[in-house]
Length: 112
Length: 113
Image (cartoon, rainbow over the protein chains, first blue to last red):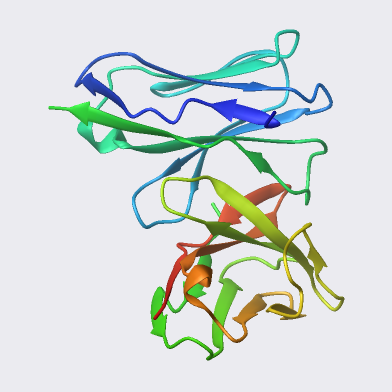
């Protein structure tokens, strides 16, 4: 069993739709959770970072963490074609210079 | 956010040759840098942790004699793929740590013929 599970998709939705991306994890010791966006042939870009259960909002993006269920989500409201990318969840045990464990990434396409 | 650069962005080499990839933190000092490898349609797999002034720590299954890492300064880490083979063809990405967050470089696409 992988430490972090993420549906690779692909996921295709119309412009303006609400997108829900999810990851589950098996190691309850994970404390810090991140979502990265990666465009084709580019490095990952940090979107959201959270360390507690609950919701964190930043513009059109909302990150949700449920530690009791070992489940995290990223919601994108009013999705735009420019949101088309691969979204990777990542998590780590300790904040700081620690290695990240990534999900497989979900390839998302927003259709105009 | 902090900026990390990589050079070259892509490289093609013949089997058996060595290739060096540079990772630079442009606006911050990175005591720790990480090297990842990403195969098509797959996630990032950590290869090694690079600490300035000390030997790198390699993940299980990564050959340290094949993937040489040097972190000689707080802004530069290099990965050298020695005696490259076609199966080493991949997308290599580095990251540097600034204020407890990893910032990734744009990646280097290596193709070994």
